[in-house]
Length: 65
Image 1 (cartoon, rainbow, N blue to C red):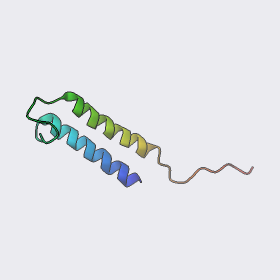
Image 2: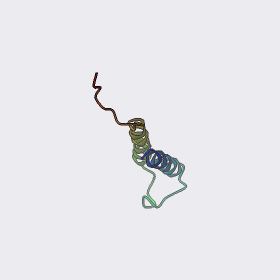
Image 3: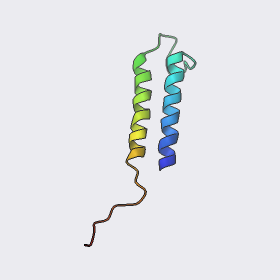
Image 4: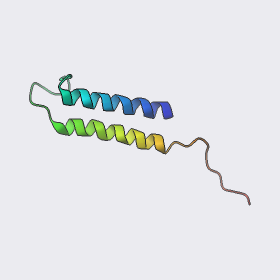
């Protein structure tokens, strides 16, 4: 799942930057860019990194001591 979180974070960040630069216009009609879409993509990238942070290497089990 760590690879999925990193991959999605990268995709969301890249699409957000390309949208902000105007390189991709297929998300909206020829109207002006909405910065809220850029912010949305960057928030999604940040949430993917939070998801990555909460992935642990091994499950926690209660101590028997």
